[in-house]
Each structure stands twice: as C-alpha cells, then as structure tokens.
Image: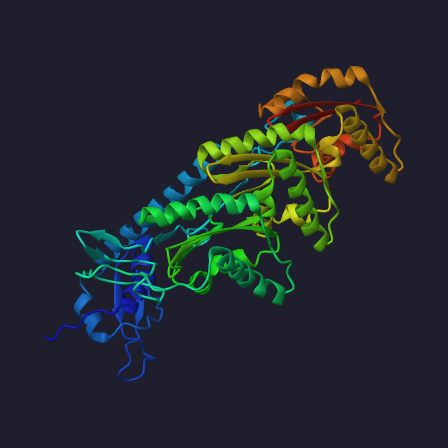
Length: 525
C-alpha cells in the first residue's frame, strides 16, 4: 500500500469539519464518498451519528480509507488540543487585561479631587561650541639656517621650513653635508629697513586689491618681534609660535618666504586679509652679508589690540549689533548688572575647558580674539542672538585662558532687565488684556494674595513640587522671562480656565529667582 503525506490544508479541513462535530455529538464518524462527487474527486460526506451528510472537500479517497477506523479517536485528541490552545491564549489575554486594569487612568476631573500638585520642568538645553580646530590656529615652526662651525668644518644638518645661505631656494634641505673649506657668505644687497618695507608692501598689496584698509607698521609690536628675530638668528635653533597671529619667515628672501607660507596655509592668508586687522609688527634679522633672513610678522586684530575687558565688551557689542543689523534685528544695549553672572559662567567654561551653555539661552565661544567669536555664532545653536527681535539688552562675560578667551553673551528681553514690580505689573496687564477680549472684568492686584503665593514661587524656582486645593485657582511657571508666563498659561487649558474665570475679581502674583530662572506663581480670587 502506498502512503501519502497529508497536506496542511487537508488537515485543517479534517479538524474543522470532521473532528469538532465528532466531539460535540459523542457519536462516531463514517466518511464515505459523496454521490455527487465527480470521478477522481477527493470530495466526500460525513455522517455523524445520523443519516445526514455534509460535503467534505479537500480529502482524497485513499486518506479516508486509511484513517477510517481510527478517525473518532484522532478527532477527539485533536479537538482537545485545539481547545487547550485556545484556552491558553484566552487566559494570557485575560491576564494582560487584568494587569492593565490595575493601573487606573491618571486623568481625573477637578470636581472629583480635593487637591492637586504641579512639578516644574527645568530647561534641559545644552549646546557646546566646538574648540578651534588645529588647522584654524596652527603651530608654526622654523629653523634658523645659520651654519654651525665645528673645528674648521661646517655642518648644515637637516633643515625643515628653512633655507641655508648656501641654498638660495626656500623649503627643505635634507641630509647632512660637511666642507673642509671655511664657509663664506655671499654678498647681500639690501639692509633690514629695506626688507621690512618690502614685507609691508607685500602685505598691503593684496589687501588694497580687495578694497581693505592697509595695515600700519606698529612701533611697539615691531620692537617685540625684532627682539625675537635677533634671538632667532643668534641661537641658530628652532622657533615655535602657536599664537595664531604670527607668520614666521626664514630664508634668503623674507618676502618669498612670507608669500609661500600664505600660499600653503590658508589660515594665514585669511589672517592677512581680515578686515579687523589694523596693525602689524615686523622683526627681521639677517646674517652679515644679508643673504639669509629670519623673522616674524605679527598681525594684530582690533580685539587683540584692546587692553581692558571694558573695551573688549564695548567692541564686542558693537560687532554683535552690526551682525544683527545685517539680519534685520535691533541693536542691543549692554546690561552691566547682569555681567557678573556671565563672568562667572565664562570662568566656569575656562575651568571645564569647554565652551557651552545649559538652561536658558546664551551664546558662547572661545578664540584668541574675543571679538572673533561673533563670527562663529551664525550656527543653529547660537544664531538666535543674531536674529532674535525680542531681545533688547545683552550681558557679557570674558575670561582669558593662556592665549585665548572664553566668551559668554546672554541676550535679554525687556522683561528680564525690569524690576520685579515692573514684571508683576506687566503680567497683570497682560491677563486683563486677554480678559477684555472676552468681555470679562479686569482683575485688581491684591498685595495679600501676592504674599500668600511667595512661598510657592520660591519652591517652584527651586524646581520643587507645589500643592494646591481644588477647585484650582492657581497657576505656575518656571521661565527666564516672567513677562512670557501669561502666554504660557493661555496655551494650557487648565491654566487658561483659571485666569479667565468670569467670577474672579482679584489676582495675586509672586516671583522668585534662582540660578537665572524665575518661579512665577499666580492666584485668582
């Protein structure tokens, strides 16, 4: 006898049509071919304890013949298994629902409760200004190409970023060479003052071509760089500079060396063409016949030339306002009473060696030129200080760390620089303006009501939970500007219902400041 596997669809048909009725009726099942079946068809009929029949499509005759005697037992076992599986699933689903129902919905109407509470949410904003990349402030080196004579011989050594008197080209001289004959320099043609003037002309020519103001040669800056150049020549060693404002020249032609550096390092080209660079100091020293020169060109920006923080703050605000004007925003006034807090934050950034802000908005940065940070604020994290039209004032903090500055600038609204009484008067005025739109009576500021809310305002400023009786008559806010609280309340249905209560006649408002944020508490009576 040949055996055939039972297809899945046939097993489902058998269980559904044959086995389940067999269990329900408790009788036996006899499967016979249906009279209406076409020749070769697998259709059949099922008589379960009666003479009635039902078509059973999908089961071939040979399967019926094989399973015939054992079919009632198989039907019983299969149906028990199906029922157990269904029960297990049902139990799992019921358990899930029961577990869920043990957690009642947190929403409840004010009429059904006798007290409520509110927890303030503190701002979690944190934006970091990236530290200047190494390519922005490169460390430059040069090696003096002055031969070192030992026992009548000359050892040129390996020169990087320099040239020797015996090699008129700028660049790298590799390897070591010696000579038994004494070294004699070639005859030079220009003195130091002529070379400095050539350098100054080379600096100003591209600036004039780009309609920039020519730089002037500063005596004090030049004296400092001249002392460095003399030491550079005398030592015959290597010099370093990481100030980001000095170009080192080294070679037979200082102008060629300067131009080569600007061509190879775009940072220095941009430095030489900065509009705010107004002065330059040049120090040059050459060997006896003027065939090799080494020295320094120091570009001084307007910010670096300032000597006091007061001057730096004034110029920074001027540059900030110029950037705001270009974007259609109004000028900001310096707010001296807020500067100490920004000074503390600038010191904090220095201690952390990271320029960033947390909580309420401020623009921060770090740079060798404190005024240059304004250029870095045209980014998503800080652009608000350049475009925000609601701001009227700004507080500045400046702290120096080595050769760079940490800068913190916080824009302020008129509400933030006002007195507490002015802020409260503004809040009451805004509430009454909204009530007037609905033809509701204006509220009168009540001193006793205000005093009763002072404790809650202080708790809220410390981000502590406050509780209040129901039905609700109080509103709260944690904000950098209390005059923006009414707009916040109007955007919240529960708070809006409080301040728009048609039966109210009095209002109390209390403020408490903590770490730059205000806890605002209001009560309507």
